[in-house]
Image 1: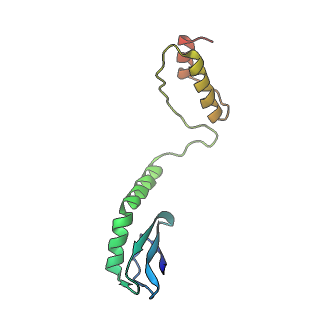
Image 2 (image 1 turned 90 degrees about the vertical axis):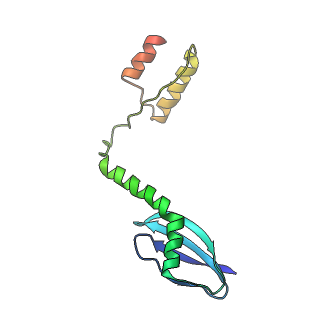
Image 3 (image 1 turned 120 degrees about the vertical axis):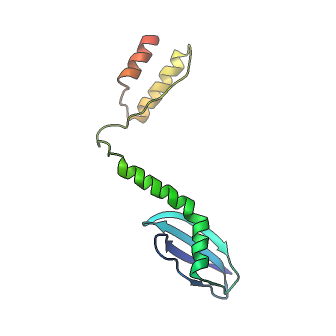
Length: 134
């Protein structure tokens, strides 16, 4: 007993599917605008015919939330200006600590390593330096 693999593009009308006598459901690979959205295993009786309205309802139930997330992400990406390729991303970090300069220094060294060894500059570095001079 197996499953019928069905690949769908969620922006297009869904296909009707006829299962064979040995197929006990479908394995749906869903994409939206060519990007993988999800995968679902859905049981059906052997030999069942899954018409377009049934397949559309199945796809809506299983993948609507994922498509909504992808659409929101695409919209945000379209509205966000691209970062300059050579500049690291800007990041603000609040570190709540008191009287632990060695641990704070170790944390800042770890963060600098993540940044490829680029040291912290600007206001944050000055604030740490005023409170805990090396």
